[in-house]
Amino acid sequence: MINLVFDYIFIVVFGWALAGAAWATVIAEITGGLLPVLYFLVNRKGVLYLSRP
Image (spheres, rainbow, N blue to C red):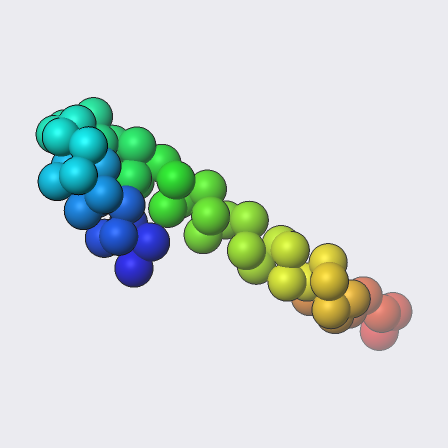
């Protein structure tokens, strides 16, 4: 969804064409990678639980 919104803004509103699509994709990828990390940092929920068998 982020990519679609930024695609529209960068391509239609700013008129950046291919460069706008590229920037929209980069922003969406970075956001998609950071949001889960921030979620787990804020909620302090562990993803991996290590224990001895």
